[in-house]
Amino acid sequence: MKKFLLLTVLSYVTAKQDFSFLKNDLTDQLQQMYKQEIKDNIKSAKQDLSDQIAQKQKDLIDSILNIPSKIDILEDMGLVSKQKADLFDLSDPDVVKTFQQIVQDNGYIFEEHKVTTEDGYILKMFRIPGKKSELQSHDGSVDSLEINKKVVFLQHGVFDSADCWIAHYSDRAPAFILSNQGYDVWLGNTRGNKYSNQHIDPTISQQQYWDYSFQEMGDYDIPAALDYIRLLTKQDKVAYIGHSQGTAQMFYGLATNQDYFADRVSIFIALAPVTTISGKESIFLEMFRSNVESLMKISKVLKIYDIFQPNQLTTGSSQLICGYIPDFCKLGSLIADENLDLNEGKRAGVFFSHFPSGTSIRSLEHFSQIKSSGRFQTFDFGPARNIQRYGTEKPYEIPIQDIKKVPVAMFVGSLDLLSSQQDGEKTLEKMKNDVVFYQVYKLGHLGFMIAKDMSYFTRDVLSVLENHHSAKSNNHQNLE
Figure 1: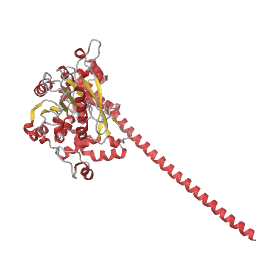
Figure 2: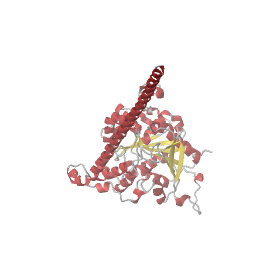
Figure 3: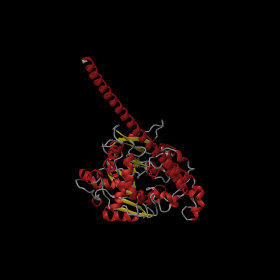
Figure 4: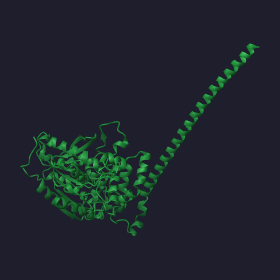
């Protein structure tokens, strides 16, 4: 009887243990099934999202490809220029050439240099020290360290790259004009564009990498470039010529670190200067500003922090759309020209074949904040981070009125829909007598690079340089 009871107890305990094991095993299986189901659902959701994005892209491309059949209707409505082919001609051979090829094919010497900023971004700069016929020795070599020329530094605008300075015909491209005048020409590429997309930290996150605007460019990019150029050329100062965002970063730099720049910059020439942005005509910025909150939320969810990278969709779309509907080009912040007929058609094709070059979403957000606030201010990170960065809950207005030690020349376009004449006058009023040259030209934003009439540069920019940074001067101080 005892044995029976013992066997019964043992059987019960064993069965209970087996049940417990079975229960645990079933629980594990259910958990695995549940996890797998979640994974499958997430994978399916991602695929659905990917399919939706792909469909949207397909719809966009289809709508673009269907544009030709609608041209007559759009022309009748007055929405399309009847000279569309002239406005955006892709037949020029330079359309498919690299920066180096364009420079060398026009008989100039090309150099590439890399510099690392204090915060770790690796920037690529280009140099045009002169013409081959001028500097090459009999064996074809060039000793650029022996070149003793005044330096001009060119800085492009948002979405752009150094390519913009050589997009025009060689006798009208700013970089080539300067080289012909005897200057040692250096061209910057801001962090994050197609040439300057590396960082010393291979583990840096995408969010950290793209966390910048013209503010960081003024704090780090320009100083890194100027220090490198000074070290290599032994020239004490450079003439700085900026376009669009390239002016914003220098206005910021001069206002916040004036002594440093006064020791390195002889003249600041601002083409299409950007401080305040009040022009309601800039359709792109209006669209961005009205949707900035949604865009930032979407970018954070999808972990997208950059925009307008040089890929086939964006570049191909901009080429095709602008070819048929020039007015649509106003949707690009750099292409804010009221009258595109004033630009050289074939060279517009060259420009757009090298555009866009990429930037951070924060860069656009910064300009949107400036437009909304009505003042030239630092980036608004929100109260908590503002306190960390600025010591106050709100961003501060950049004090351009304090710029006294570096002369400033302003070249403003009356047909510029982004950096308007009204904005130029506000900047002039704020800086008062510290602006040594101010002139308004019949140019749009893009016209400063590829206008049919580039006399603003060949006449007035060169005149300003002659007065403040002459290539012919032999009494300048070299650094030893």
